[in-house]
Length: 431
Image 1 (tube, rainbow, N blue to C red):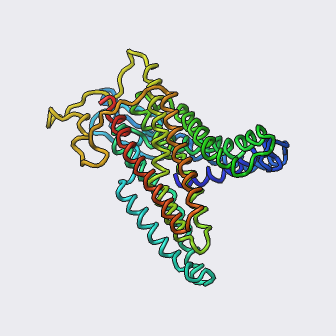
Image 2 (image 1 turned 90 degrees about the vertical axis):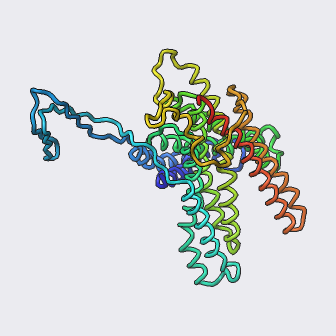
Image 3 (image 1 turned 45 degrees about the horizontal axis):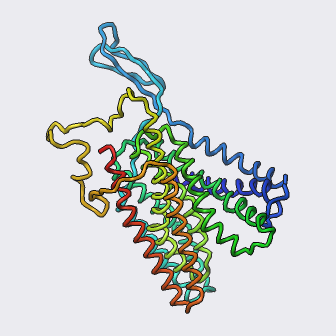
């Protein structure tokens, strides 16, 4: 999965190059001119990466052999690859090629969080000597040696930790192929979002203002309006592309949550990479960026998209045929050793935590409403951060840093508290 993430990140750079050729050939922010050279260069560089991605994501097949008892059968059967199957009774052999159905197995969230926090602390300590002497060769070599593993741990482990968390809470049967498809759909949704934020929105603002809009205005509109609207629409479309996996509101919430994690994974890769180019203060830059995004921005993207996924799940659930055979997870299975314990009681018998209490919240099922909630949450996060950053810029540097960190703490607290009720309400669906 890490290989696919890096592959898609490289591919995204060439997709941006193609978009620039179509929309802004001279890269001055406004529309035009068309630059065929950029389009051809981006296409030629993208082609082998697309082929490699398709090869990696080819369907995984398994050779299934079934031995059925029959009086007319044989005790010895010759199989492929010079293998022989011997059975104690006469059997008939049937062979099939089937898609792999291995269940999704994600490492325990606690272990991933320990790896993440340990990696961030060790890496920050290794970068800290640069604060003393940024020209020391030994300090520079140590920083270079630690940079790549710090980057991999910083951008990936919190996403996989949240993925593990959601998988363990929803108790929905998910194969490895399905789980990977959700993450990859989220990563691919960053491609149109990048084009919207980098070319379409700046070009539209400059066109409507007659080229008089300042760079600050363009940037603020992109952050506060374009990013929430464009990114949430792109992620919602990614959830719709996985309609074949969604059969209920609860499943839609899970798919949306994972798609949001995929989007955050590719976005986080870029932010963590940039934090490593902060010079002598990279210890603070890397540490703060990794922690804030790990516990704030990543679950934020997941929760906002999960809201859209919940409503999409409701739409797809209504379209199901009434005589359709229910999925296994919908049956009221009973443990023969304890007839009073059913699969719906799993959440109440597992360890109690911040996310394992009950909720009386009734989530809306309208897609425009839930998509609007997702956009509003995203816009409030971005807009308030821009406002606080502007206010702190007029304060003493230490006071400004304190104000910004305090507000980030407030945003994360709001996300966790509100997200808890939303998550619990979604978990109780179909229970």
